[in-house]
Image: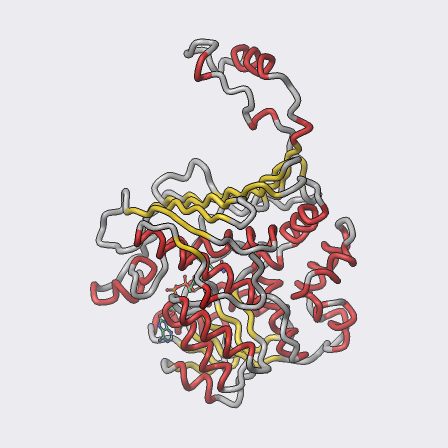
Length: 439
Ligand SMILES: NC(=O)c1ccc[n+]([C@@H]2O[C@H](COP(=O)([O-])OP(=O)(O)OC[C@H]3O[C@@H](n4cnc5c(N)ncnc54)[C@H](O)[C@@H]3O)[C@@H](O)[C@H]2O)c1
């Protein structure tokens, strides 16, 4: 294989990183990218990792499409208990791929170096631990597990062994996020004083079911036996970003969750509001609702000198907003914003965010993915994440901090659910603290 044939996605990613301020230095400071330097890629060019995939539904098939463009990846076995998904996946891979319905067969297969797990959440820990114990490298989709105990068990299985483990947290491989975090850590928006993340959709989150006995298998996301609902499905990505930005873990959590609109037999909330509090008083205000999409998806880090929205790749500086409240009000009257309300009293909002000037985190077309898809978005880091996983399998080097970040964000999701269920303010439980965490 020619050198320039290898690692197209990773190379593009590295080029993008090179194009942003301090690109090479940035690469050197992101712990999970250490084995992905151009020099390391060159050393391993032409080597192949043989992959078995367990769970070939939406996300699994999305990964299979991405794997086709990764020269180092060869999919040898596919496993699923639902025949239509297995068949569709086999068509993506093409002739020669083995198929089975018993996931343990994938672990026993000598033609498998690494396993990709894209099954419902309740299966993640059991499959991950068994795969590591069988000597396979593992890529498991987020979130880490459905219970705190299972998160800890998976973390221990990983940290006591020598196998590679990745989780499907693509933001860690998205240049827009990497650069945004660099700007935050460099002090561009001052001290972090708060964080606001939300994910709004207007869709029932249901999938069509060909016959009623398949309801729970196909719509597993809606039932607590298999799913942590909005917190683990959506919140896990966003809470991870907050931890990454602040470098700390919250000490307390409280929240409220309800089924407000989709009263269709589901068990998970369609509306969640959770507050996480750090030891310095800083808070994450987390909200997700799937019966109104006006607010879209945002991940705002609020600083004493500005605000950075990681999802949008945009920041706004406080110093840009020096226009006086009265001038704003006059402008709004002129623009007809307040034509129907009196020009004084509670409707006067002198600090509207429309008056801030947006600055792009990166030049070029790095707009936010709409966040509508249950499967993934192209160009959101998922392809680079997979390729970095293949690279780690080839070098055998564990990628620093990925498992720890997955552990921290999943724990926060599960604690958020527990706080909503109990209606209490919960302290971070001491028994789930790992050495990586700082409070
Ligand atoms: N990182 C991301 O942005 C992202 C996006 C979408 C989904 N995901 C995650 O991917 C995972 C899968 O989600 P999905 O939307 O693809 O779900 P899905 O229901 O479409 O696919 C899950 C597949 O697992 C199969 N399965 C269930 N039990 C099995 C078993 N015992 N053995 C083998 N196969 C089994 C199902 O038949 C199905 O084909 C979830 O954890 C989800 O959170 C991550």
